[in-house]
Image (cartoon, rainbow over all chains, first blue to last red; front, side):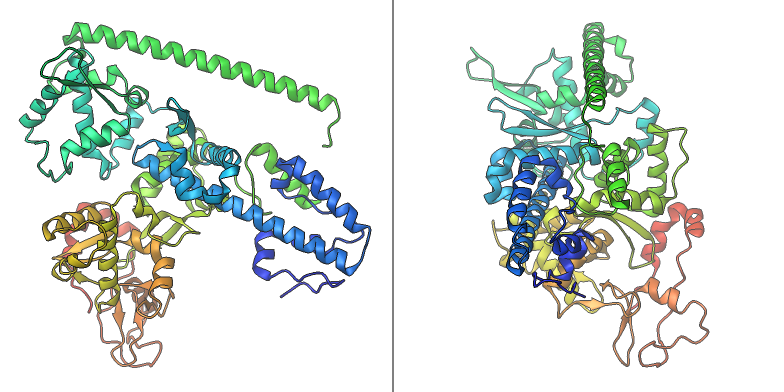
Length: 329
Length: 283
């Protein structure tokens, strides 16, 4: 059911029109009136909007069939470009979600290689929109980190659960991740109890006692050596380095930056305590350290909340002054 | 103008959220976000799990609010997901019609969600198993037949022993179901890949005569060959004393299963798993 073009303008295929709702019809009939309602995308990029309007204005004065055809063709091309941009943003969002599920940080070059392709000049725009979707729809914050600032991870911005809520949610099966995370927490526990770093040999010794051998395929963990030395290190859950001045050279593990973000010393101590059927206070040194860590976290959280409130106040003030001035609506 | 007002409303509710269509999108709150996150973690959930999840999310983020009717709740979220080309899709298990929900891709039609979890040769193993399942008469492919194809896999060479482990990984991640040494598609895979399967195997694919969706397991008419899902036959023949083929009117020779009743299921509880393995397959 194509709209009968009134003045020789290009008929637009039905599928495209349905996607954009009634706007195409209006664009097509645009001749004497400038009543085209700009799409939200145009609204967000006022520069493009202005130039588009200027072009339309110039052509419009012709009021010829050719003028209307060119307008329609240009509008169609613009819509196609925006749709392509939308699609790419959507693909990037999915890519980031899937990659984050594996807990591996994502690099900019990966994103360009697998998703963005030849739109890579629009990378800042695309990643900004993707970040907004991730924030608004899923409650994730896209954080840039790494020395070159080209690596990204997703942080969960939803409020962390209370203990009873956590238990409620834990009833849900963790799927394939459960055993691996359990293994990780055991290693984090060992590292913490040994004073925030553990020799590689100590880690393998503990695992051997659990029946886990580095290069033997395990039905729950796959190849443990690969899981621990590659996956966990790459995902920034563990840091691995050579201990200086050791001969023969030895290596040690410590908590990676992601572990510090996602779990706390107190929680890990609690886990170790449960394992040994004791109270966390049974290890006074570690307990004191965990308490200090909790205090630090509370302080950092309070600071972040205070600055957020200040920013919100500033924004409200700005909006109020805006409204007092020239405001179209 | 109606449209302008709707768009303005949208803007104040979601100031920086870009919208593609003119349909008024719902509002996302932390209740919806946690729900989405948890649904994503599980991949696929049964309806009673989904209801429990929904209540949990309300309890965590908005104790005082009334829990919205599930269908509206999901439609609300889907209107927001539309611009991301994904949606929460509702389906049913093929063996006993239990309603399930999964977050599926509307645009890309490949096995993309699996692509990040599995290596190239593992994905190819899945594709081979998928082809055997689709070509089979029962919707099941035997472990032996799948493993015999191990030499034809793309990528790194895989031994049969390793392939057995990979098949178990597929089961664990809810892409395949195993029954007595045979494999079929998990309802999650059917939900997520229906479009891909119909486009990639248009000749081999089987379709249900009642609901017109992809059919992997089901019953078929011995005279004219049309097929129906088990839950679809249950609903279609529910009040017929003498079931007849809707296409050729010949007597329908198979046992008609019962329509899925959520109340009865909850009572059965843990014995559900046993029921499934005792039930005979219909072909």
